Structure formats: structure tokens, C-alpha cells
Image (cartoon, rainbow, N blue to C red; front, side, top):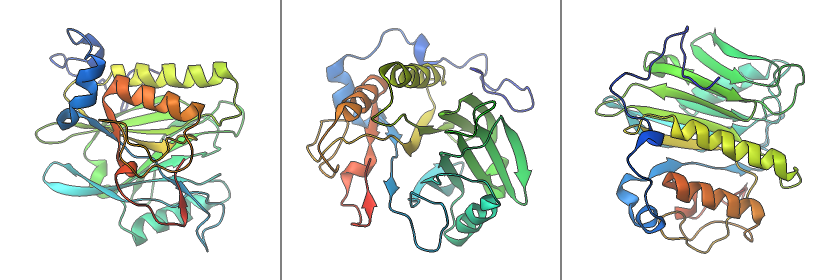
Length: 264
């Protein structure tokens, strides 16, 4: 599905210009220097938090402004959300006041949207196999701002939020691991670029998830800061290329992270 939908409602308005319809793409120099208009990409993975079963990544909170109130967002690689673990996730969202939570490695089959207590869950998995899978969960404070959602595939999902003066598109990803074949990695980035290109040009884009990539601590002007971890690998090169093409900045490289967390 390439179009946003909410009960079959198309929420890309007629007068909105998509990113792919701009007059010309920015040059590499323009993309590197135009930090004022750069979209934001969040990416955190970590060690298993104590007392949180089947969770591989600790969530990280950031604030974005939607309408007049700040909203806190996070991302979590849960490894699986079967066997009642949705209740664990909702409990953690409530405990640390997360309004929008992206989930990686969901391992649910099918795709859709449902409501559980005060939370709206948008999810996308494989049709017949409980592998991969992504989801975005929002609490009732945010639910009324959701304009629509895009169930791209079992590795990419997004929702669009009503904001003032501009709307916000939130993307959650679960990238292929380093051991994946080249075709799978290529398909992932092609699909992700297609989704980004189909987002209205004026939207603020916030992308989070498990990228399974290392971008090292060396700063790349307009794309990373000085606090990436590890030695840059081939997956890191691919991630940096995507960020440059899409005017995205990896914000988690701008500050020293806790020692118990691992940046991927």
C-alpha cells in the first residue's frame, strides 16, 4: 500500500506538493549545508532492560511539537510482541510518558489498525510468517491528531499527524541485518525512498527504528555528529547515503549515549 489511509480516507490534500514533485533535487552540497530544513532521524538499539521480557532495545524519548503541546516519542526493538507482551509495552509507555512509540521486530502476521484500551496500534507484518514486523503505537492524546497511516511492508510503516503550522510524518523501520542478501537490502532502501518521496513536501519527517548499521564517531557534515559508535560498515555507508539523499540528520550521534546502550 503506497497511499496513506485511515478508514479508506486519502489524507494527502489536492494542494499539497509531494517531495518527489519538487522542481529539482538538491545538490549534495545543498543537502549537506541545509541543516535548518533537515528532517530528523532517530535510531537507538540497546541491551535488554532488566525486568522487561523479550525486549532487545531500550526506548529513547525525544520531544516533537504537534499542534501546541509537546509529544514524546520513542523506539523499541521488542524482538517479539506475542504472548501478551502488548500489555507490557503499553505499561512502559504509560510509566515513562511516551506518546508515540515505534516498534521493530514485532513478529505479528497481517497488517491493520486496532484500539487496545487507550492506545491505537498501527502494524504491518508478513502475510503468513511471524518474522520482522513493525508497528507504531499512539496514546489517546495523540490519536485524534492522526490523519492517516501507510502500511508499506513488514519493515516500514508510517503515520501522519496533524500539526500547526506544519504536519508531521513519523516513520518506523526495521532494516535488514548485515548478513542479509544484497537484493533484500536494496528492496528495503528502495521502498523507504519511495515512501519518503510520497510524503508532502512541507511535512516534518521523523524516522526511527533499528537500522542494523554503524556510522562511527567521525562527523559527516549535515548528516552525523561526533558520537556514533563502532567502525562504519557497509550498512552504515548505505544509511548515510539515504540520509544525504533525503536531507535527514542522525540526531543520536550528536550526544554521548549511555554505556548500557549500543548504537546500531
